[in-house]
Image (cartoon, rainbow, N blue to C red):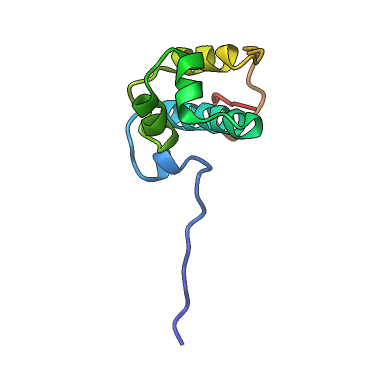
Length: 106
């Protein structure tokens, strides 16, 4: 019987896969997840969402499928504002000695 081994992830799949700018990719993915959740909660179709966000429907589709490289973090934050969400950016000193400072979306 063979033992199965595993490796604990870092919490950032993009980092674990060795993708450059992994932290930015994770933040974008988290923001897109929020946008998608809001759209679903409101029953918004992609075409209606595109009108609200000021982009084309195919771009909404790409974004929701994980192809969001064309959108900056700032633009994704503006999409949340367009969806009537307050966006708050908080900067505070990092307290942990065991890990590096990081960006978080909550």
